[in-house]
Image (cartoon, rainbow, N blue to C red):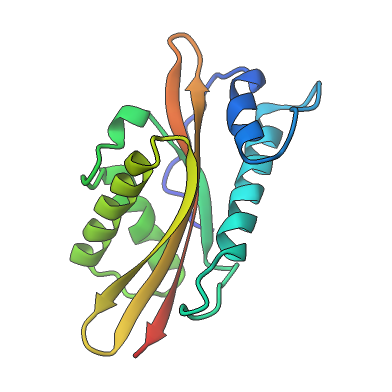
Amino acid sequence: MAKVSVTNITVNVNEFQEAYSRLGLGQIPAGVTVSTVVSKIEAKLAKDLSGSWPDAFPAYASYQEDSAIMAPWKANVAGKAPKCVTQAITQDFTSWDLPVDTNTITEMAKQITQEVANNGGLSGTFYGRSQLGGAETLYWGVGFATAPVINQPEEMGIIYVFSAVLGLN
């Protein structure tokens, strides 16, 4: 799993209740930490992502999966490629020994921000294909949920899971 950067945030665990419920995880148990709640959300997103992985794609590779929090929500501009997204995908592809093609990664990032915006910033799972020349295709998927990730002032963010595999045509 690749990580680009770590930032400490201050948030109340109850702020995640809406995203937790939306994903069918029920009520957040009393006394749990924010990291536990985020881990449960990421695990559910990963399960949903792998469970709905399209049959037409090569097999899902759980060792090629990344999860994190992107904030602030306002950085998710539909159809744009935020630097944090392109950096994360580039680092993932480098770690997973997948082809690192800047134009392809930029287009993927644009599609990801568009799909998150299309879902109203709530939660969802979506998949895409990116052609790399005549013989290779990247098959990828994203699962996400939004929640307030910083208190005072409240700031929305995106908790996400991302995976990709390479297929030969």
